Every structure is written in structure tokens, then in C-alpha cells.
Image (tube, rainbow, N blue to C red; front, side):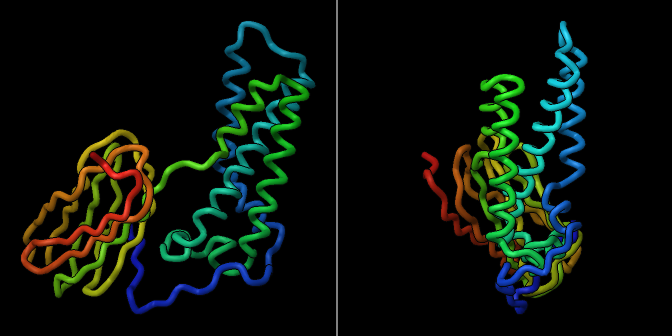
Length: 236
């Protein structure tokens, strides 16, 4: 809730040389997400009417876990630019400069290929195809909120179809960055408390899946805002 990036800061070039340690590659895999995926797959095995051979079950679970890790690595490669702008994520291996972006891409692709091939050989190719689809590109919208109200705002909240994000505060001249994935359609809304204590809510453009691109939101004095969407396809 405090992913604030000030406009005077400059984004460093990402991934020129690798200073990575083994732990950085582990972080790329997003171990907590891997554990969740592995638990879900294990639950599916246990709920099946018949259990597969233990060797097949173990190899399948291993392939699914590695595939989930590969997806995490590819996600960090794809999101490296926006990760560098957010306090919560700028210490990750790629935006911090410890790991080159190209290395993360190669690491993710190799793991993904091994996971899909293994699952196809030990289980079936339908399961392998579904695992491959899990790491495919999804539509994202990069949103930036710039505070030009002349004072610090509090309790910033941006709501979009199916979810929302926000920050505890945003200083005058500050810019808040976030990347979203749309589910469904609906209006973009911004709500915040101004430096005078007054709460403001502003309705923005209508968003619809599968739009992607970027939206710049500029908060102005007097409870006004400008929305600059650069999206494709355009919502009709």
C-alpha cells in the first residue's frame, strides 16, 4: 500500500551485468507461488478416483512445480520495468541489477521447456499443453497516478473491474505506478483524501477485457483529474 515513486527519481538501466547469487535464482521462481500451485496439484491427485503410480505422480508434481517456477521467472522478466518503479518490488533480482534481464528470460524458458516436456512424457500431452498455457502472455495495463493537487494526498485508491490498488499517501509531485490485469469490464475510479481532509471520487474511462496498454492519471487541484489512456483495442 505504499508503492510510491517520486517523479524526480530516475529509473536505472535494468540488467546490464549479472551479480546474481543462487538465492536470486530461487527468488525468480517465486517459491510461495510454487508451493501454492504444488499444493493445488497434490489436492487434485488425492481427489482423483484412482491414484497414478507413485513415480508418475512424483514426476508430474515436480514438473508442475518447475513449470510454476518458470512462469514466475518469466513474469519477473516481463515486469522488470514496472518492478523498478515500485518500492515493494524494486529490490527484486532484476530491477536491483543483480541479475540481467536476458538471464532471467533464458532461465525461465529453459525451465518451462523442461517442465512441459517432462509432464508430456510421464503423464499426457494435454496436461503438458495446459501447463504451457499457464505461462503464456496475459493482457496488462500500466497505470501511473501523478499528484498535481499541490499537497500530499492520503488514502489513494484506484478501483478497476474486479479489483483495485492504492497507497497510504502520495506527496505533491509524486507518481504512483502499478500494473493491472483486467477481468470483465467497468469504469476506472479514483478516490483519495486531499490535504484539506476532503474526500474526492473521480470516474474515469470504461475499461474492458482484453485491453492492454497504459493509462496516465493526473490529479489536479479542485478535485479534478485528467485521464490519458493509450489502450488497444479501443472500448466501443
